[in-house]
Image (cartoon, rainbow, N blue to C red; front, side, top):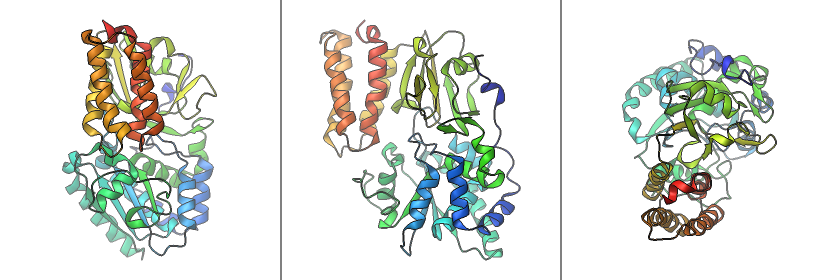
Length: 394
C-alpha cells in the first residue's frame, strides 16, 4: 500500500460507552465557550457529506439571543448504500444522547430530538428505553434536558435539514429557501443545531479524549476518522472506521475483489470514480488541493466488471425521479428527462450526441435546483456518462 491509513483502523465510535455519565458530567461543568473551542480546535466537519465545520455551527447558534432553541439529531439515513447510523444508534446510543445533551448545554437549548428514519422503526423501542435512563441521570445531576424521537415516513428528501424541519412541524417535507439558515431560523422558527448521528458520535469522542487526539488523525482539511459503509462487489462488506485522507487505490486494494471497475463514493448523490482515476482520488474535504478529493456521507459502493454502468445509472435515476419532492421545476422535470433520455439513447431512438444535451441539462439542474437532491443528480449522472459513455450507447 502507498499509505498506511487502512492499516491503522480507528476504533472510537463503537468503543464501549460505559463512561457516558462521566463525559456528560465533566462537559457540563466546563463553560460553553471551552466546549466550542474544543470542537473548533478539532476541525471536525459534518459527517453527512456537506462537511460544514461543527464547532462553527454550534458557536453561531450559541451566540443567538433567542430564549428557545433546539438540538436535532438527523437520523434519516436514506442515502443508498449507507447503513452506519443505525448501527451507532443500536450499539452505542448513549454516545449520541450525551452529545445531543452537551450541544443543548452549549447553545442554551433544553429540548433535543432524534428524527428517526421511518424504516428504522424497529430501533424506536430500545432508543426510548435508553432515553428514559439518560433523562433519569440528567435529573440526578440537576441538568434540565429532555430528548424525544420523531419518526419520519420514509421520504428521502427529509434528509435535507429544512425539509426535515417542515416534516416535524406537520407540513409536507419540502426544502425551505436559504437564508435564513437553521442556526437562526430552524425548527419552529427557532435557532437550531442539526447534526447527523455520526457527527454527534464524533463530538463525544472529542469531549472524552480532547481535540488533539481527534485532530492528529486524518490529514489537513480532513481531520479525524469516518465511518464507511462498504457494499457491492467486495469480499469485506460492512462498516469500517478509517482515517480520512486515504487514496482510493488503498481503499480498493483493501476492499475490492481484484476486478474492481469503479467505486461510487457518497451513494447515489455522490461520484462514480473509474479505475483510471483511483490513483488521483482521495477521500476527504481537501477539494482539488491534492488531485481530486471527494467527500462522502459514508457510502462506498464497489462495482466490478460484471456490472453494467447503464443499469447502475438507470437505477439511480429511477430513485431520484421517485424521491424528488416535486417542488422545483429543475429537479421535478430534470430527473424524469434524464431517465427518459438515457433509455432513448440505449434503444437507439436518440443519437449518441443526445448524451451531450443531457449533460448540459444535468449541469443546469446543479445550478438551479432548490436543494441538494436536484443539485447532486449531476454528480452521478455526469461521472457515469463521461467515464462510461460506450455503455450508455451499446
